[in-house]
Amino acid sequence: LRCDWSSDVCSSDLLIGERDRISVMGLDDLTPGSPVRVVIDHDGAGSSEITACHTMSADQVGWFRAGSALNLIRQRTAS
Picture 1 (cartoon, one colour):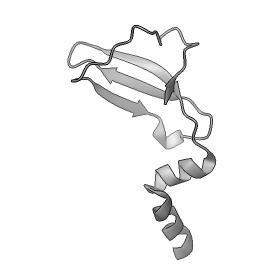
Picture 2 (spheres, rainbow, N blue to C red; picture 1 turned 60 degrees about the horizontal axis):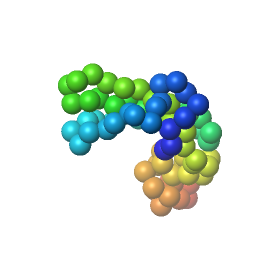
Picture 3 (cartoon, rainbow, N blue to C red; picture 1 turned 135 degrees about the horizontal axis):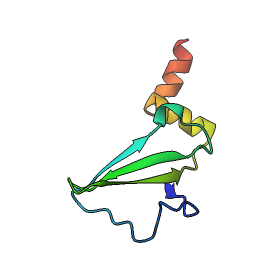
């Protein structure tokens, strides 16, 4: 994922600590070229949200949803 630097909420001073938790939101609606929301929980000290872009193709999104390319191949051959 890469940060959408044109967004006001994504700045170069966004720090991610070693105890922070990162959640990628909206993966059910993931399509090629669609942005995803990334929420960073700063270990109990609030949270930050950024918009990130991915570079996955339609095939790669399918592999992601299936868990791997081999899982997708198995699903396709079983039907």
